[in-house]
Image (cartoon, rainbow, N blue to C red; front, side, top):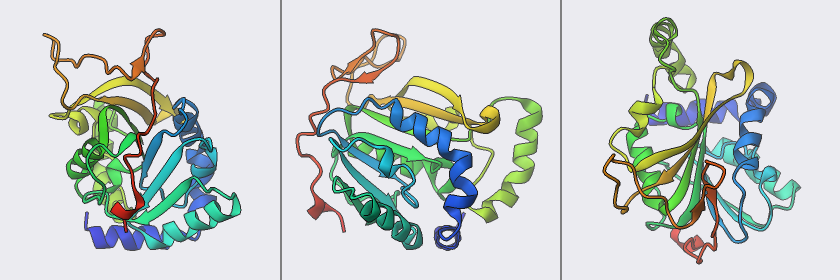
Length: 245
């Protein structure tokens, strides 16, 4: 997928994106934010913030930075931020594959409907890992191929067509995570027909691993109920607006 073409496609979508896609994908966005258990002063990066549909859902005691490559989508997001007086939100036009943030700048990175809509998902995932602190969370909300041979065959057939619309349908979660430091903490199906997955991963970079290859839990997480949850999001002021343009 050509980066310039993708930018044009989503800029063209900006005017009607909320009406066409807003309701369809609302459940997934709401589930992603509701389950974050956001802590005071937690630093959150939303990659591919789009028109900012999720921005009003975040609590105001955290700091949100949203980036998108489409100026048209960002214009809509800025309107929402102003309408809802979201003073805890900052928005920047930025390529997710070449972020202008320092390493370990964020406690949590959220990417909703992004991984299959970028030209090089490996670079984008690598960048998300880089800017997320060790033990932090990376949340991906996306459609991934599910292993069903019949459905996978159909997805491979239509993927060349959907690429012209700005996304692909033939990418599996295992392929996305292969070779990364990410460890799945939660994976649930969301949205109509449960064709989309909400995947919460712990950023295991720099952590020693168990004998079975899985990372030791980060000290910032608790899992008494079997799932990961943020426990010490103090932010530490890692993100600074002068590092973004």
